[in-house]
Amino acid sequence: MFTNVVARWPGSTHDSHVFHTSDISTYLQNNHRSLDDGVLLGDSGYACSPFLMTPYTVTGNAAQEAYNDAHAKTRVVIEQTFGRWKRRFHVLHAEIRMGPEKVCVIVGACAVLHNIAVQLHEPMEDEEVDELADVDPYHGPQQSLSLRDHICQTFFG
Image 1 (cartoon, helix red, strand yellow):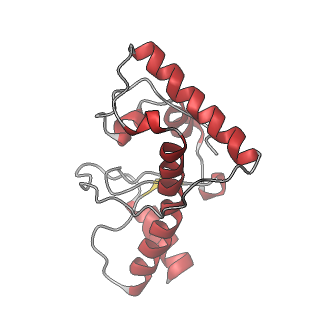
Image 2: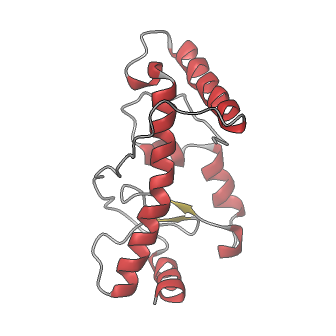
């Protein structure tokens, strides 16, 4: 189910930019205090931060490989959700040729209708398994590499 939808950016906008300009990102930057608050998972296109863990771009040991494996297996659930959403609402597959305001309403409506379908256990016509897409790695400041290392050693080492 979708708990937050930001539909005000063109499809060519990088996911990390959409996230960093979102209310959720602002909330987490101001309120996230520890691992007890939970973490989000992002692909290698995001910067590692106290509330957003990314995979290791190069693994150096078995613990890091296990972390990356668990990270990918968890993230694929999200990718599959987007795939099911697009299969359920074919309008989301390509450019929507309408004004930006109307497109935002359509995307939001598709998210709400998807959540209702999930709650009602509506079947999908086809259950394809989506693979994780290759992502250009983020090259910039990484605030929480040591926190990621701590998670890796604590749970996978």
